[in-house]
Image 1 (cartoon, rainbow, N blue to C red):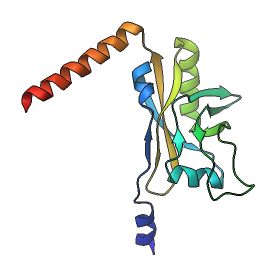
Image 2: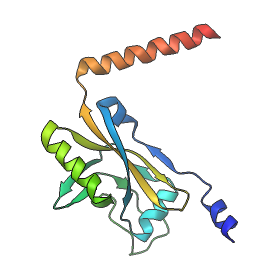
Image 3: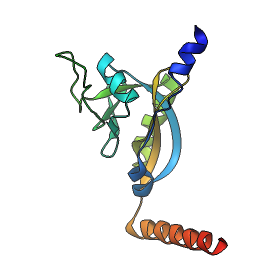
Image 4: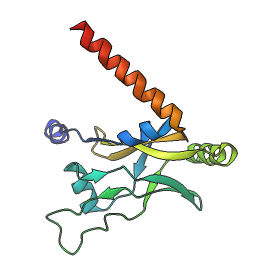
Length: 156
């Protein structure tokens, strides 16, 4: 029975926010749980999530993600969820204190990098403490990718 359950979760869900690594310099990463409803987790298992415009903020003592679009579940009825609702992230207290302190001191931001389902079947969000890149930093990244691509072509 347990093996069958693990095989059911074998289909990997790995949704990445490619824009975040282009727009921000990643300083530190954390893995957080998300408070979801039933139809939201079903949509995530179908990989119907968009992280492009999502960001995290503190409200009270909790950390929330805003702008993460989880499409409505196709089989859901009137129990379907709002696609753009704010969702609470679950982190330990010391991690929350550390993040809030760094946000106030250095003017950094928290962006979601990746949404995945772990081996136990829970949806997890990998978030990062990040600093915005300047235009010339983005150009350097593009140049380095082009050079790496050229070197790879020359190899074959």
